[in-house]
Amino acid sequence: MKFIVLLFAVILVSGPGIAQNQKSDTLFFVNPYLQIGSNPTAESLTLLWQTTVQNAVWTVEHRTGTNDKWMKTETPAGTKINITGNAVHTVYRAALTGLVPGSRFIYRVLANGKQVFTSEAHAPRRSNQPFRFIAFGDIGAGTPEAKQIANAVYTVQADLIVVPGDIVYDNGLISEYRSRFWPIYNASKVDTIGVPLMSSIPFAGAVGNHDADSRDLDKAPGALAYFHYWDQPLNGPIGKEGGAFVPLLKGSDENKRAFMEGAGYRYPRMTNFSFNYGNAHFTFLDADTYVDWTDSALTAWVTKDLADAKDAAWRFVVYHHPGFNSSREHFEQQQMRLLAPVFEAGKVDIVFNGHVHNYQRSFPMQFAPDKKGVLLVGGKENKIVRGRVVTGKWILDKTFDGKTNTNPHGVIYVVTGAGGQDLYNPEQQNDPDSWQKFTNKFISTVHTFTVVDIDGKKLTLRQQDAAGKTLDEIHIAR
Ligand SMILES: [Fe+2]
Image (cartoon, rainbow, N blue to C red; front, side):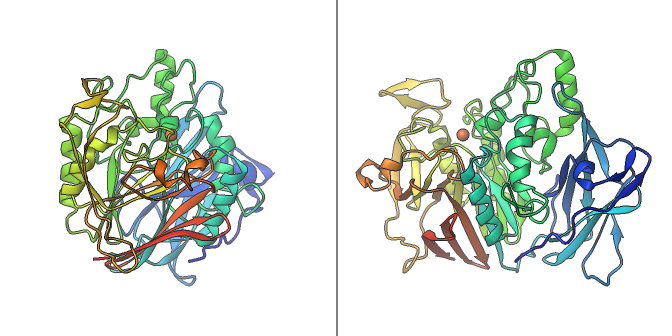
């Protein structure tokens, strides 16, 4: 599964708006990177790149075999990002369509007719093909540990990478993407700073609190950069500002207008969405504390989304705040427990969360909140339903060990938030008495990431550290 960036750039380009002898290092504000796209299929991916260069004529081509004819995409669409305090740049998007599912392909980007970037990648897998995805959250801190984990992820390789939130710290800003995200995950080559992951592997991301909480565009005009830079399905519920799951956007009309010009139709919808990959269905949700998960429109969408995916061999849900968390840190942020009955009815296999900077795997479980929509604090009803304790009753499947018994009863909840930020509660790893009863595995002394291999109705989940050591492993067979 090793992809190689074939050639990067020292090709000179010339033409209107591009200086002679300009290297692609300066041509690209951000190198080309792959995403699932707004309308994902097994035959398509979306390629994005960013540039400060004006007036270049961009073309994207791809082909499956080295002797095949290059297929030209539709004209790439550019969206200008002109936000106070940031260099004016344009985000280009080109849909790579007509891919052969499951096949490796080559793409190239041309500026004014000259090739300036090329890479290999995989088209999404067919439903009958094995595939690998990696999940790791809380990745955007720019720490040495984030770089080590990025390097390990690059070494392992995958078909798809899912990020359960906190893509960039601290406030989801354009400037933070520039310093803490692109150089690490979308480098030109493997170096001491980063790896060229995103040019060959599509990332899919859920918003975390550090991506989406900051919404005052006067204080931080570059906030909510997620909506500028990601390209994901827009099949979730349509929220209204000030409603149950979209907070008010604050700021001057001018700053709001500048934000909306960059974010376009992706704001505010691109926070809850789903797509199929291989034989699996992925549902991404916004678990931030501003969301009211007692909202019937929101839960109805999740219920229907999972029901519609009943033919998928696997159903995974990805969001930031874990409902089931044994760490002392963030322990009371249990709002997502309310969704447990919905996940159980929808036959979800595994939920992937971040927010808590360590690794935790639950027993397969069923959970019934004490009273739907009402959270209890100190035994009293609390109408403030967000970010609070949710009590209830568990049924834990302790017979499942992922080795001899590979048939879990219930949903397995995985916290994989050890992607680079400071680790939480290392003192709890060897203190199982401090774990909640639903927790089966707890690793909090080392940064890790999750590798999931799917082969038909068999699944292997491994938690690995930066050195490639497997610290936890389970198998599921259907
Ligand atoms: Fe977080």
